[in-house]
Image (cartoon, rainbow, N blue to C red; front, side, top):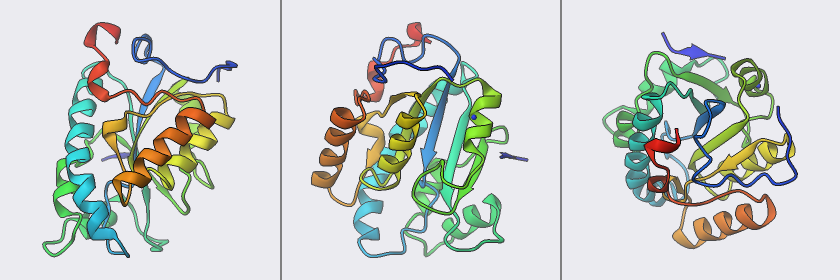
Length: 205
């Protein structure tokens, strides 16, 4: 069964590619990729998120080899009694826009899965407690939408003094322009690294 369910401070919260995996106190966050995409511009976001899902899965495989925890942060689509299995089953129905993406990123049995009620993965969830129990100091944040839920989560992580890396090829927004704008804002305002996922080498883990 999936595990369902937070520090170290620095004046500079940007995490460089060559230090991102320099210790085990790091976790991968996957935001809202198990998704119906049943909303305005959902089809556009799903189209842009499909190649991103493949990049995230490739990164996830590399990180899991080094026992780095993976945490899914997911909307519950207003179904307050739903659990992750209900959400996954909903998103993998044959007529669902998010079917292919959800199947690519099928959670593993030992991944963590947190249902969130609003944009930020920290708001009214147990993410803070989980990260503390895991001893996490650094966060790799991926998913959708870059200019909404990823941005809000990155902002809350920044305020909690986590070092943050957001691989630019592992994030999608409704448009490429909005995604570039969000990544630029997070790099400039939140001082996060946005280097591509392939820039982290196994030798740095």
